[in-house]
Image 1 (tube, rainbow, N blue to C red):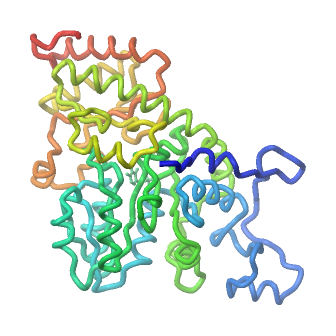
Image 2 (cartoon, rainbow, N blue to C red):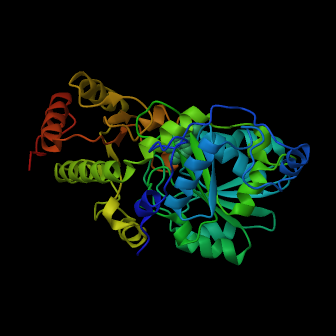
Image 3 (cartoon, helix red, strand yellow):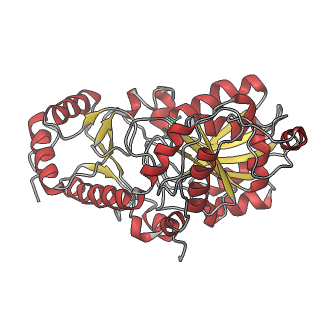
Length: 406
Ligand SMILES: *Cc1c(COP(=O)(O)O)cnc(C)c1O
């Protein structure tokens, strides 16, 4: 595959007002017009290059959106105040009361809660399916279905969606395929595989410094215009707008995403192999034992690797908690939700980020109590990290006596 997402970002050239190497930050909520006629035209959506009010658009937000659209290979994008602030307007724009969404059952807890508990209040129902089973997906489609929703690499189980086949299904039934690509920026380019809309929580790898929440919707000009329409655009009317100061800061962090993703992937791959060799139940898409390893390989932009996320199952919640507390004490990472930080973050998803999912359903989808989700950091010396993690595991009694250091 010849798509080069990081080159596409790099090739955009922005200058600041006084020749600055970073674009000027637009520090205004409203904009003057030289003529009243232009203001009217802008309201009607007919004045390109004019800004009206920053909930609609602002120069700083457009710069960041343009860079993320270049990364995903879509016509354009709109940035939002959070990942959920991107996901909910997209689904509400695409579906009306009486219509239906088909969603992967292994998705981010907040998205699951929205689809399961909130969208039905608006008459939008969701059929949750095993997204890796294409026959199930197709069987769930009805004449009310409008959207197929999935994560390219799912949270927290790291299931991989076959974006190309799902896109073909979507096309066949005239549905929109919406893909949340938060776990695999640069590695997977869903639009290139046929997705209609690509969403990210910028909070995670893309911003990478755990100092803000943010989101983006990447899609066609027509769809992004619909989202921003002053009369009936869900992004415009629900108001989840990113602040300009923040979007300028996210854009600067985006500059190093390609280097960070390579290091996250390299470190995660190293640890996953070591953990698996110890006999720990390890899930990482870069392992040959992962059920979608070949699929991921066939979709990926190889230079960015298999990403920074992995899970291990240590058998029980008590052991998981003890291990995480000890690893934090030894400064190997933080017991925290979220991902994509320079430091390793770990949490037990069953009792945290996926706690919105009822226990019974957690079991069905393989989300066990002893599961620990790791977002592997940018550690310079991953060999040392492993040795220290191994020591913690030995002390907590996670490893059986026969699991010896390979
Ligand atoms: C965190 C996350 C979200 C939600 O993003 P926020 O920025 O927290 O609103 C959505 N999808 C995935 C896969 C996530 O990890």
